[in-house]
Image 1 (cartoon, rainbow, N blue to C red):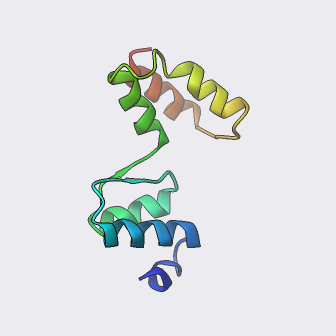
Image 2: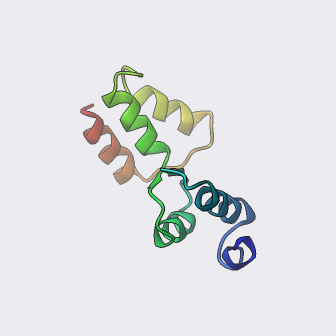
Length: 94
């Protein structure tokens, strides 16, 4: 399976999808678009970092998503389009 998936994905994404299927994981954490599409096509539920942050905010684990996003962007090298950034803040109620 990894070899088949590796034709269209990086090794990390292919390995993560294969392992999630093997373990019958409830959810796979993945941000890479092609990997998310392939995982969903394989029947996996996929969540990305933004989804994790929004869930953390909704459950009260973090008080706000904006400071976390801003730090990930400024110090962690994360890139988000302005539209996606604003959408995430709206969904967080910020």
